[in-house]
Image 1 (cartoon, rainbow, N blue to C red):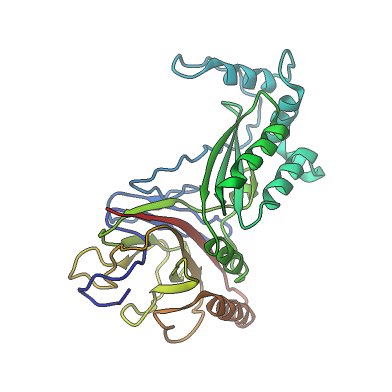
Image 2 (spheres, rainbow, N blue to C red):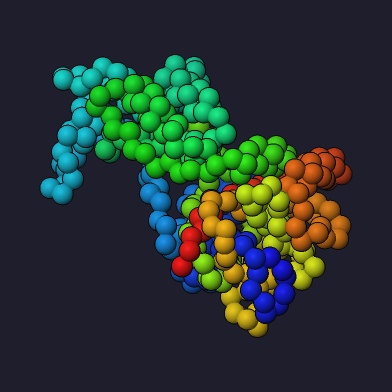
Length: 354
């Protein structure tokens, strides 16, 4: 890709026209992401950015109720069995429910004690997810349908069945395990280890949502066809921040979408809208279009309350030394500025021929 203002760039795949909107929040209000089909930025608390062509199912994570809700009648269009089983578990009944499923249900629905005391089931699920190599997986329990939704990504499809089988064994026969896992091959999956060790926290919804177990995965899957113009809007955190947007390709390189020689680093006002890339030929910013080779890659946005470095980096450079540099800069910023804060969020990027 070349940063020519009018020329079509090489295969850099971040966000295209009418694509996502990403919102960054501070660590007290976890990083969130929101999507829109228009370039107007709007943050949706605790929501991930939606992608127009590839709408990945997002489990609805509800906070633990203060009181046990009554069983609800299931609509005709929804299978009755899961809700009946969920209602029985809520009531503490056993009946013909698999005792393994009942124990799993209660472990998720009594998270205060479980988290404080170290619940074996939740610990087992967490350990299982962490043991999958070069992956980032999270499960969300949906009590209304007695469903465990598995999202995140695997390095190869051959790991899918063993992961699902192991989780099903943990959940028992009466809890459905729903597969929402994507593929993110090496070396991209390995780049996330370096990104996560930069020293900035990732949003972690499970701090406030006990129905989640595992590392937070991608905010959203973004899907693009060859020739699409790439741009997207960001909503800054609720504190003044500097936002760095990077694209990590399959060859081990990183492309700095912002800042760069054409797009200077500026301090974003709290919750202000930012444009990365150019929607039209005359717009400021990089002119980026999708091109081959197509596949699966990632984009990352870092936000920091103070600048992480002076000047600009080369438009493209090897990812590993850049992440080492960024790690050093974050540590220095924390030392120099006691009030320093920041965060990061990432997206899976899928591209294909038109």
